[in-house]
Length: 543
Figure 1: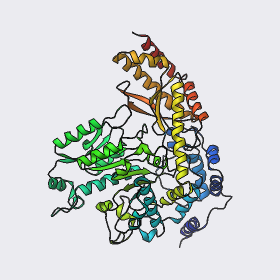
Figure 2 (figure 1 turned 180 degrees about the horizontal axis):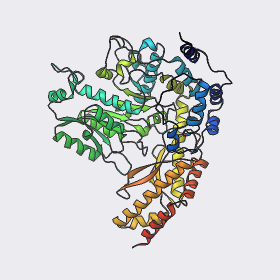
Figure 3 (figure 1 turned 120 degrees about the horizontal axis):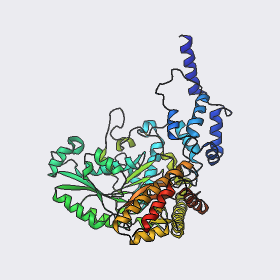
């Protein structure tokens, strides 16, 4: 073997067999994170040191290095280009998206999960992790459906069934739920061998219909558009129903849409209820949706990716009344179960439902095995169930209840701050722990209540620009952060740009929320925003 090749082989051998010494760069990073993750992030993440274009320049080359290198050299690159420039999502002032601080025990368990490198597609590569994942799915199933303890022994480790599916997030969970619904609607029947075998065109002809539709509120997650595309429904048959003044699906409009589609010979595949809308945190009337689904004979799915853990709270569980009637429910563990990204789950009320999407292969996922991969869209998957199991075991029901109650209370406190501040307008009341608001001085609010339509539209267009710039400059400053979106409000009858706050981080305090508003008041005095506000004032004085 040539000397160069031998040197390369020896380097590779070292990479796979010799761990980094504790005093190496990687070892020191690992130890620092283990000792104090919050302190490590605060010390090493440099807010807005470089803009996105400058960061992109560090990743511009597409040439793959020819030779192996030392891990320590690579970790220097990681420190400078990834760690220093990452978003500090765990910061208590980062209240704009559905990410939060992680419990400290997640870090060593995540390293253990990586070291074990189990593949949950198959028992042969996850002998202990497969039963644990089945248990986690059973725990979430019990949280949602409250079945008696005696219900679970026949199902939890049954090779012919699964109480749900573990996946990388809410998108795959929602796709899986509608996949099951579609295949059950077009199940084998006589000579028809089912949609999985014969395809959508043959299935529609068999049922004598021209299409199938899914109904969801206009606040529904964008993943349902992907599902309609992937499952062959077509995005035109994802019916986005208007919402009421509380951002909940309008039941009268929903009924009208269902009837309209039936008149066009389109079958209702599923009604979707949202338990914690992404933009405003509101909850659809789940009991009424369950009644409608039963009336129209279709699948009832609840997307509780965000709000599902509210079921831990004795005080607030009633907000999700009717979820136990759903045929399927999505919950994201990487949201309010405080697990790392990406851990999602979908559970099914009927443990036999997943047989509609069962698939096998001779070399893996054989008939009769307990392989969870036979009921999942994804194949190879890491053992993320370990981290969810850890959270459920260590934090426990009471711990999650406290976290949920704290988040809802903090959102209400922030809403009160906004109402009492003369320069902000609350645009959606917090039902859970998400709210929206905008910069809009009280005098402008008063003018908007009396202004004719064209004047109000012109004022709101300028305020949209103010809020967009405010959010941009606050993000770039890197001290605190809120996100933004556009919502149609009952008050104005049109879409406006609003700021969005998510209060799930238990480290966020009332003082930090005060500082968010204080910083925003300072930002509106900067750069081009004062000129926009002068235009707003001029419009307000115009009669």
